[in-house]
Every structure is written in structure tokens, then in C-alpha cells.
Length: 265
Image (tube, rainbow, N blue to C red; front, side, top):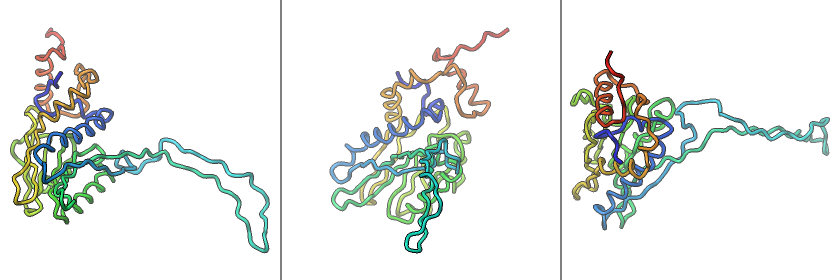
């Protein structure tokens, strides 16, 4: 069963749902691109480790304490003090592996394009700072950079450096930076009510762009992930909407039979 929304489903932005969707987007994007890339390029999934999933410094959720040996009177060994054993305290920060997609030139092994799907941790605090630093590092290479931001909240893609006025009610954005044209960015600005774009994916300058069919990729994620069984469309979405968006969402879900509005008195 497909999502009731024509494009991004805002109910998927709930933190507990996002990691699964994030991984599926990477895997199915790789699957969709690979036939277009052969034989010159290979789509490869890589990952990086994040130790601060909330994007800010926090007190760990739990501590693991290894008790010390029983303290004794200071001892000497040929005139040298022997230290008492301290207790060992380990923080409970969860290590998370964040996948991203690289398009590799098969013969040389060089990374030609990096495709990032943004996570909630990229939006706030130190997670945002870390992502922006990685973004800046990539801009100093010969790689193309594609950033897919299907999350509400502060913009962190390269398109944030430019004024995107059309359409005015855009909520999601895909940003493309080509290695030979760093002074400009190609952007797909996506309102909630519109379908996701079929995006250009740049390769080496002498080759035509590949095309990432985001609508098909998202539909595959939704179907295979069984999200229709997990999402409660009777409740408001987990993100703040404008008044116009709220009315549109309510009407859409009512039309689809997923939300019953109370009868007018």
C-alpha cells in the first residue's frame, strides 16, 4: 500500500521511524542508480560513525561502573609508590552508523559523487556543526555533492547559502553542487503537497547525468517497510505545519479514509 501523500510523508519524520527509512533510501537509491552507472561507475554504500545521536552534548543515559579493588594503605616498592586501583566508568552513548552513497569510477577507484540523505542529528547542535564541516571538506575536493533533505527544520544543505523563493511554501529540498561549478547550486525545492523530484545526479563532466527517481525510491521504501501498518494517520503529524498545510493534510487524509473529522454541530 503506498503512502497517502503524493510526495514526502510527514508522518515518517518521527525520530523512531526515520533511521529505518534513512537506511532504505540509501539502499534503494543505490539499487535504482546502478543500472544507469554500469560499466564505468559503481554505486557503493559507505557509513560513518556518530557518537552523539542527538547532535548535542548530553549526559549519557546510563553509566557502567567497574568497582575498584579494595583500597589499602599506600605501599612502597623499592622507594616507589604503588597506585591504588581506580573505578572505571563508561558512558552509555550509543554508537550509530550513518550510511551514505558514493559513486565510484570503476577503473581509478576515485569517488566522483557523494549522495547524502540528511538525518535529524544533522539539523541541530554539534551534529549540525559536524555535518557542515564535512560538507565544507567535500567542497574542497573534486567530488560532486548531492544532499537530499526530506526533514522539516533548519536548512543545512548548500542551498541554504542562496535564497530559494520558488515555490514559497517549500518544506523539503534536494541540493546539487557540481565539482566544476562551486559558485552555484542546483536545487529542487519541494512543497508538502507535491511529489518528490526525479533528480539529476552528476558524474564526471564528460558524461551525462544519471537520474534518481525519488518518487519510485520512496514508494519502494514505504511498501517494503510496511509503514502503512506503523503510522497512525488519525493523529497529527510529528512536525509543525502551517495553517494551510494543516488544512490540506486533514482534507487529504479524510479523502483517503484515514482520518474521520468530527461532524459539524
